[in-house]
Image (cartoon, rainbow over all chains, first blue to last red; front, side):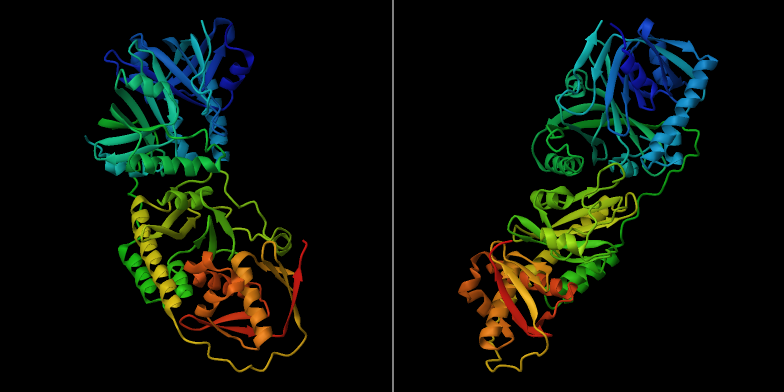
Length: 155
Length: 438
């Protein structure tokens, strides 16, 4: 079984996407993705990331580090975390268009929650866009509560 | 480090969620949002651990953790490179974090879910700003209320001659403020400022919401951004009809409040009440403000206790044994429901509980003896009031009754005629009625 339709739709909706990786010295890094394109058939997620803003994250993945991505809906904190190996790829026009569309939608979503455009702009950067291709190995429910951390599936 | 942790104080206000990344020994990363990050000192932070989380498990094996914090004024992001040191499940810092967590999660109905398991202490080894295309506005630290302003309020409080004046003196220093005093397991609003309705007589259960949590914990509770939290009481549209039906006065509130702070008023180790402030601005109250307001609340608690004691000591005998000429005109109807001591005047709900009983006592005595002057001392000794429970705060209840009568524009007024003495002013003669059923 792979990413189901429901999860793919959630990942494609305006959710915040935060990334974690670590370097060779086991030092963790944080990053943000500007949208995700889920490829259910390949069980792969393309995460668009600014290499300008998050150079250490991109360097870690390039060096073979595993990747974790948490998708969190700002209105109700419903969250999922996905983990697996990843590679770095060049962003295509489709990726760039998807990232632009994501930034537009998440800005509106956050605006609806009272966060001004100028406030969220520093988190929504698409300069020097690359793609982190995450092969999904584990999916966890991350919504705060008793089920937090529960594994949905493991391949 | 180039950027000092202390300069990032605003990032720790809990407005924008922080993020933490950790890694298991095999290099599997974990990335998660955090509900609370607290600045402990120049090189330490504390992270809330509510669940037996992967984060907590990871750092116990690989202590390295990256924490991303955000300045809520301009959105600037900072990554802190940290290492886990230890975990606290008791003590001042733990209790402070647990209290803040309970207060904020109670408002979104997750009080049980969000119980704090431990406060995890991390050493901060480095801080770096995340690149941003927006011009870097290193905003000035949040401005605290000047100490001279605080001192001015403190002086007015010191000079206040009675309980009512003390309450007004404290509130005078703020735009939107309420003062609630403890009555049994509840807090009763005795004074407010800056609201459409005064809400005098409204109640909050100890332990409920920001105000009730500050009372239960006896520590300040501060919320810096309410935009994503359901606000208490704001949806309740107050109306006289609603009060008459429920015999409950709604708490006043600002629907658009962004910041709130509740400060417990404690004297001789006992909770006396809560001072509550709110503002339309995000981040209106800084940690330094909290410290200054806490001093004011403590001073006010001490003076309130003192004025209770002084009023109780007044021994003046009742001065008016002779009957005064009774007020003329059409009698007004006072209905008393004995099951909750609620009192209605001309069909308008006025008050219930001990204050309701007090009002009935004063009116009955007036009708029986013709006098309108009373002393606190005789009220204390009156058998029909069943007073042991109100021994400590008769003044509070009289003040509550007085203000509620004023607010309802009732044909009865309570006038303070001296220390421990009051007079009943009646615009027209009362007609008392006992109701047995609702």
